[in-house]
Length: 368
Image (tube, rainbow, N blue to C red; front, side, top):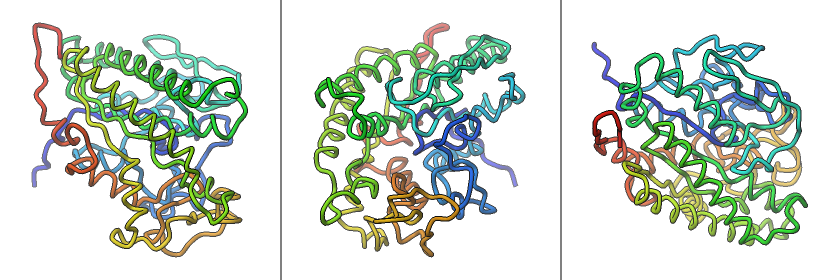
């Protein structure tokens, strides 16, 4: 039997713990998931560093398009930062880092080490998550590698047909509401800063050949177990949800603007906020019986202590919306990909399959 070819050359993933597949395993930080009960429903019950009981969104997306699961970038370099396996650069890499954000200030720590490869030196913060700026630095080195391997013209064709999936912004808003680092900034000013910074980051990725973007909305952050546990009646934090929604509006507007301003720029906006809301309004239609408490944790709503080996574990993860105090279960991740890949209700202006099928025009050596 002949296996079918992948629908696209590669997927490159950026973002935070919602899509981290193990990069934080290689960083000297506390935000890790390389221990049980994480991965209890992953093949062979592997705790790979995914903040989930099983697979996350990039895993299901890779399966949809016929690509192998994307490795974390830091698994492809040795302790000195020298690239040891560049094979995956051609089919896709995951740069996401749990705890990271759009803004550099969203992380903690200061020590630096240098990651070296055959193209250039890249600095990585070893004691705090890698924000978008550093993830883009690593992507730029992958871009240069692919150009050297394939040649400029073929590399441009490769990147213009590949998907860039970006899931980020939640930690920026958590940081605003859960720390005192932004007392001198209004919520509107902060959301505007997030949007303008993200716009610059998208333009930089465009500069490095990217043309097809999947950008996700920030979910209902105020309804995570971590936020509900401190509210009377275990209700959602409405103000946090309000400003998450405001950021999502700004995100859609900037994507529309970039489609006009940048030749060949195309995108699919995945409304995770609306998907989460729909699940919470009609949980039984999705097969959920628990939408407030985490499956894995300790304390009120299993949200006071995160998912550690000594934490309480629910027997049926498919009943729960949330895996731990912040992250959804594997079942939710699968639902999300089903909606945004082929669906029409929660994507704008097109779904991911339509984005993949959208022709990529070329003029000489410039790909649009």
